Image (tube, rainbow, N blue to C red):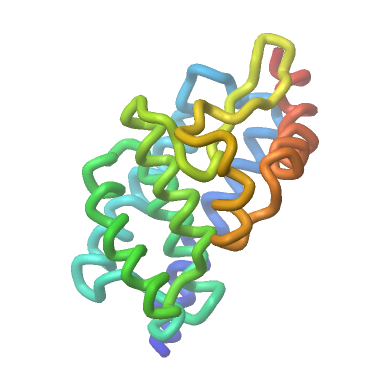
Length: 178
C-alpha cells in the first residue's frame, strides 16, 4: 500500500467535506451557484486526482486502502468542471470494481453523475435535485421499474430510503438558504 498517497487522498477528502460543511452551516450554498470556495477546492483536487490517475491508474483498495479508494472516488465524483476526465475515469473504475479493487456503489454514483451531467437518464437513481419547496427527488431514471433491483445488486439501499436520507441531510440547508 502507498501510505503517502493514501494520506494525501484522505487530506483532499477532508478539505472537500470541511468546506462543504462550512458552506452548508453558513447557508451559503445556493441551487444554481457554484460557490467560489467550493469551486477552488474542486479545481485543486481535480488537478491532483488527474495526475494520480495518470500515474497509477485507478487508485483502488490495493494501492491506497479502502478509505483512500473512497476518497479517490469522491475527488473524481466532484470533478464536475472536467466531465471529460470523469468520463475517462469511468472505465478505470469499472475495471477496478470487476477486480474487487473498488466498491460497486462508487461506480453507480459516478456512472449516474456522468449520465445526468450529459442530460441523460441515470441508471441507479443516485443523483437528486430539489423542487421549489425543498423536497428531494431523483433525476430521471432510465428504467424506474428496475432501479431498486439494480441498486441492490450494486450494494445500494432502495431508492426511497436514499431519497429520504438526502432529504433529511439537505432539507435544513434548503430551508436556511431559501
